[in-house]
Length: 109
Length: 109
Image 1 (cartoon, each protein chain N blue to C red):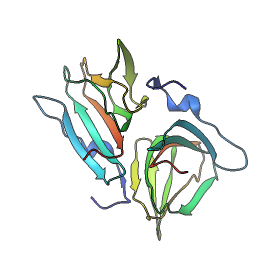
Image 2 (cartoon, one colour; image 1 turned 135 degrees about the vertical axis):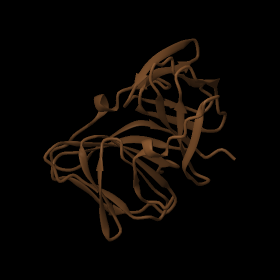
Image 3 (cartoon, rainbow over the protein chains, first blue to last red; image 1 turned 180 degrees about the vertical axis):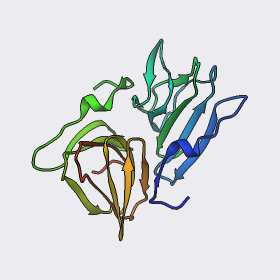
């Protein structure tokens, strides 16, 4: 994809039947911009990145952010920043699909 | 603001009568996550960052992305990545307000 260009993230979502689907919209050494796509029942388990900050911005659907010891409801428009070292994850209890923009800075190697 | 926490960016928008309003949601050396808020008629002129990539994600409203030699319509949900060195800007022709998430990686000094 050529940048800069205006895109509708929903047109770039990749859903997978067996686990969370991933697609990459942009990548440099400074940042990775991608989409995490969840069918009902799928999740991305609690994890942390030691040297990267992550920004989640919900594109469509509903679900929950997984944080240490708690779950936080989210919906289209919700934003969450997980600073480096902070555990985070996502779960889609359904019934609809859930699409989340995920920005990692710097990009993973 | 404590992170990680789920937020509604609209609750953190700062509009200003004289020029684009800015607010910061998160900042580290790796990334700055902020909001650009445009009243009708306001704009952020075409500019470029030599060493930072920028991600725009429209939260609400409509407007245009300013790119070199062209303008691209955008609306809630539209996403644009301006890689380092690529001129970009935003204009809100109105009639409604326009709120855009802006992520810069790495953060400006």
